Image (cartoon, rainbow, N blue to C red; front, side, top):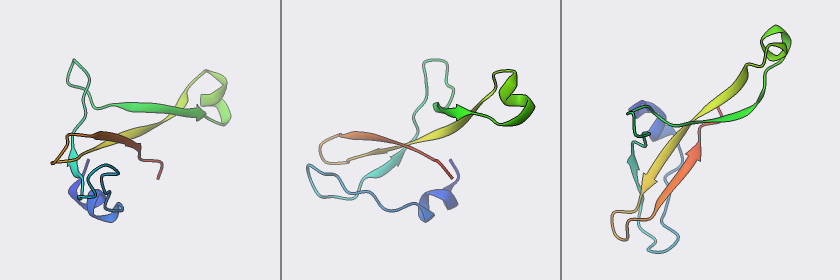
Length: 74
């Protein structure tokens, strides 16, 4: 995730501690960034089964260790 995108994103607060959560990179066991499927594409690509995806952004509370994941839907 680019640093510019993070600063445009709303600052997240930990629901347990109330402190600002910090950006963290979330990857699978093979080192790839996580993404989620958000739905079927329109047109020819949709007809052949290609789906839209969104990257997942992670934030972590530096106090209690709570991790939350948010889909980058923009």
